[in-house]
Image (cartoon, rainbow, N blue to C red; front, side, top):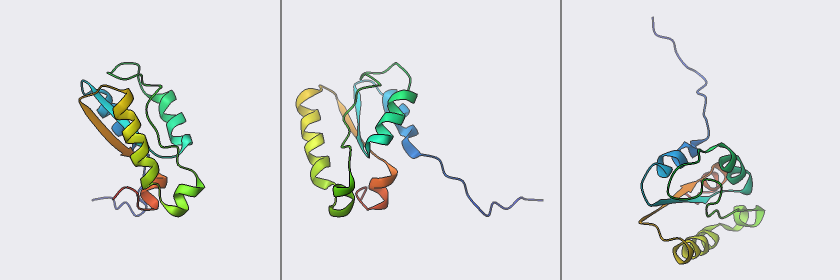
Length: 104
């Protein structure tokens, strides 16, 4: 008999960071709050093209949650392009940016 899951359990989707980390010359750009960046910086492995503890992040705050973080994301991407020589730049969104619709 099949078991019905009536309350699905969700986990942070930031495991994509490890996927990006495994791609040669790929750099993740995190569009999330500083808590997500801190959690990821301490939990990812130590291999990959970029330093797993130093990566571009928008560090969105209450202001970006209320008024939108598109400008902050654009600025972070532009700065990453200036500073880091990668072949692939991947924007990863955290829960906060997804809830307010900045992931569209």
